[in-house]
Length: 330
Image (cartoon, rainbow, N blue to C red; front, side):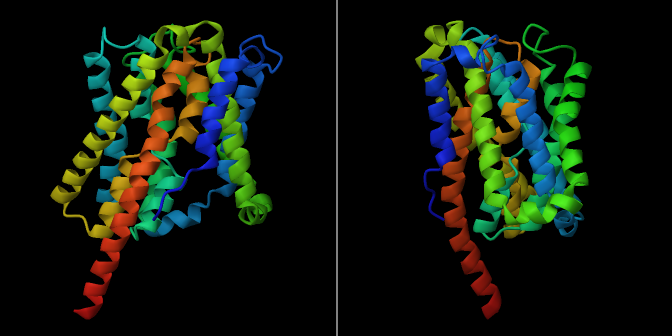
């Protein structure tokens, strides 16, 4: 599998550049009214996810409970524990908001579409990937804010943990449920127009990225930490990816997973969702002027994981073909 530049990744850079050049419209009090379009955009994203998501596709992968347990523990225990270690070890070295962003990255659920696509490209267990990627997104609504409550004070979030979870349910889960309920009427349309839905989804995320960075620019956050923050985040992201990658691989060895199951576990257990992370951050940290700095780790980790996992998918696809050929000749 050859990885090529995605217009969405270029769009992220453009959104950040526009926020640097023209921050006033997307800042609080600007004519774009980000306090309104933020929550509307979040609801739209998860409504579209609900319309496009077929729970019938999950049935064939539900019974592999050991595999599911490993993936979810990697997402919501291994990753966050590493995030807490990073948070404490970088105290005094990095800005507090960036350290919070690193923990937030580690506490996020796995990706959905790219985990499934990469598993399929590597000839892995696709039904297991579908099940775990979807389950991870649902669990993240509760588990992500619970992990963040360990270190995040009310100064950085929009209220107590119960209120945060309630807001996430209202703006994430409820639109998802409404989308699922509307599938009998919109499901066929969603299947025919999947590329259009993906574009709307990604453009909405880019809008949220723009508004997330506007306040940071207006208040001068980046003049204090700009280059240092980006370089530190990039170094930590590389380290984080490889630590998790080899840790998940070692766990798969201990569990004696098959090669196809191992592919699904690694791709679902080592990846973090920007599509979920940006809306969650808007709900959880929308009042924090340094929201752009909090989002920086997931914005760096997202393209990094796509590039590195794309390379792995290509290599593993060849190995899968060799193993399949050997099985046939036996």
